[in-house]
Image (cartoon, rainbow, N blue to C red; front, side, top):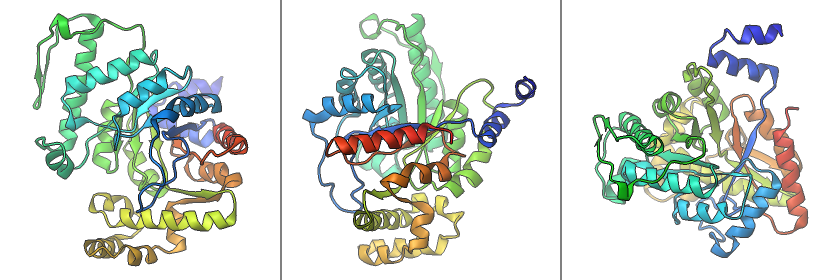
Length: 373
């Protein structure tokens, strides 16, 4: 009882930190569709998403005890895929990881998320990201603004739209980027009997991480965010959240296999991916804490002349294991927990499912990740 009395007087950050010290937090486990997809490194993936397997994959994810089933916005519309998955599941949460906010108007994204929330029976979570300037302007054909302030206005617009629908009240939202004040019955959905839609923001750098802490229910970190970067650079920026829950989620870089021979191959794939990330200026901040500024610049120069094989050679085994989780299946959960449980609430992980034995192995990994020991 004394512990609870003390905790009641602490702000959200101190409660968060004490829970880590006391070891009471359990990792929530997430996965992407297609289930068991391996990181292709710099190569084309062996197989893409098969629409015919969405139903069976979603059902398996539900049975395995995953907390969340996610869909990226890359080659397919995530909302359509998740709607199919929602009709085949009953327990697992469903979310975008992530939908590109600035490629859509707030109304368009609000409508897509609202529909997904209804179809899933209130299990939908909206993960949104800003995307980089070149993609917003040259792929989506949209104007670009500084992303931090823009994201604050964008999320404010989403919540204002949802609130007007749920409360059946006029829409009134004005900010630097948006002035929304038109609700027409023909385009206004009915209220829902579900909790509000949670929003998670994608982040790499401290600025967007702080925005997420301020306006969202969670943050989805990029795989370049290693534990040292998360704990020393990002976590100190979490301020008190009162009684609200704020979740830190990550899809880490993982090299895993059933046996040593397979693990050697997966390490090389992870090495290629890490070399690519090291060469990308947008991710440089995440590597500064490891004193890798010179290597990042060298990688960037090599990438400009497509010297990808030379880049991989510069990633030492020591550096690889500093950033990447390298483990056989039977040690994967323990290595993830040892490294990340002190800084994360959710972890994204899977292995290829080829037979019943693989299902059992993955099921045990999920159970092990969810335990506090």
